[in-house]
Length: 435
Image 1: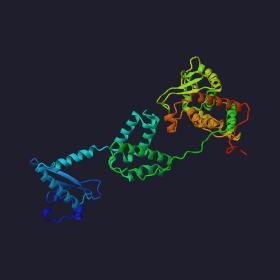
Image 2: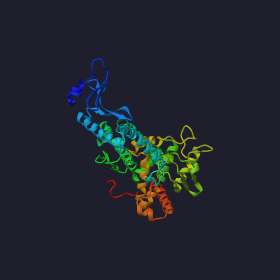
Image 3: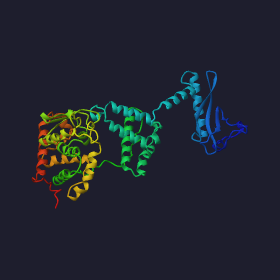
Image 4: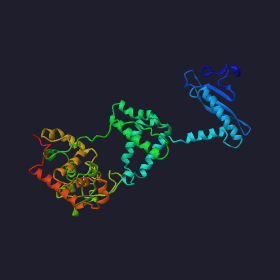
């Protein structure tokens, strides 16, 4: 009965197994069958797949040609004709049998890397070393940010997709997800994560062809916020309020030490006495993976910084480990949020007295801005922050280490901070001077 029917896409769409049968193969053209079976995913309860009947080494084999209606009747007939030509060529030894060729193709498709596969490969590569960091591994903090961004907005949407078949629309969906929930910052992180991942996939040959990220814009391009740094008058207010406050001595000293050295909040909080050579006025930050800069860095200690350390010596008992210990256990460092909470508690009073609201990292910005204010050369000031020289030609041709200039900058910063605290004239920039 099926052989006499003139089949069309409409008739195939309406085809169901004959009465009493759960599933059925129906011949619709020479060598071409439509396989109908129950499926809860389809609207009418049945799925339909094209099958091609072939002989391989004297045995009957079935070759899948895809699902209907994605593969139309005309498409299926054309593919059967192509397979027949290939079969004839295979008999002459000029090609693989179509069933074997299809098997190889299916295996190749199965082995194509998914987005999750390539993400894991990318992260592993970053741990081996980064070109941007001179071959050194990236920080685990960076890996954590990438992983958080991937798990939050990328993995569930496209993690199982073959990366070679990604479309711009699929990538844009991942970026739009945090935008829809009102998180533009997270959307920018997703964009940067995808941009890095796709670039890596192209370099490793997982994507052959057009860049699927081409034309997709960063929803929140990087625009540095105005620098939040205290001027001299605001610094005096902060130091006075800090002195009058009932904050713990370790917290007070940590804040002042950061203003004197420009070190990162975490570097000050985790500083150990083993890192200091007080007789040489030197603080050596070791090259550890946990810090933002994985290279050793030496900070010259001004007389004012040494005075802070002298006061800190009494905080850690007989055998102190950390310079600024925690309040509950002298063998552990200060709590991570201790300085942040302290500055927050001082905010209302400092604002009332004409000061500025500051956060822990703003103390580092204040130190850097102060160096410019007292005339320290910009490249020396950046080196005092342990920032890598941005000017390529200077890195290539200038072999001077600027140790003396940096020591002078730290000494000048300490002297300036002491002078304005003692009531000396303050330095104002014309643009920022208050009326």
